[in-house]
Length: 285
Image (tube, rainbow, N blue to C red):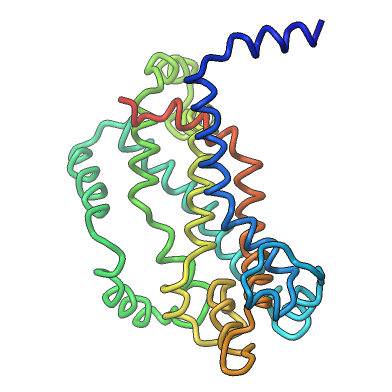
């Protein structure tokens, strides 16, 4: 029976469908090839990594053992995880409260505040890099976790995305909760937040990835190597492990593989929520 169904499915496939399938497979291979080359590179010897061979002829775990025993790479990863997790949790809480106020509460100057918040999206990060460094220095947050966390908490894109999502939530739900005696805090906590799980999951991925992959800002505000994040640690690893005047690519590929793993795991765990948020995002309105 299953064989007959498969035969009928094959007969129904049109040439255009087959062509689309082949193109999709080719694009997927083209997109995944650099990632696969990175993962296999971590198991190569120095000689194989220098030649650019795709598959290691003699797979070895020495590269991973080296970066965990000779370099404080685990500490770099823990620093990145700590900063990324704190920023993600705190930013989601503050952003959702700000977005709820801008979307559901009525007060004088609400639209002006939203325009001012939205206008910060037009200012690129390099423009504010020096003023932000001066502010952080005056607040005595250089070379500590506060200097990494506090400046990363505000993100106008998160407030904008959540506000657009909250606008699409029917007002009848909020009015029914208020009639039952709920205040704005209980409406926000017990009604709005549970309904926001898809978009919050999506922002969790965005915020965590943005802070995990941050390089310029941690490089500027941190001087103590015990506080280095993993991206700065990779740069330090490139400077430290050299062979014949050039970088030892097998160590760098192993470090890059370990750096990419947490973000990939998070993406695969939350990918269903991410797709749901894209389908139901307030951006469609």
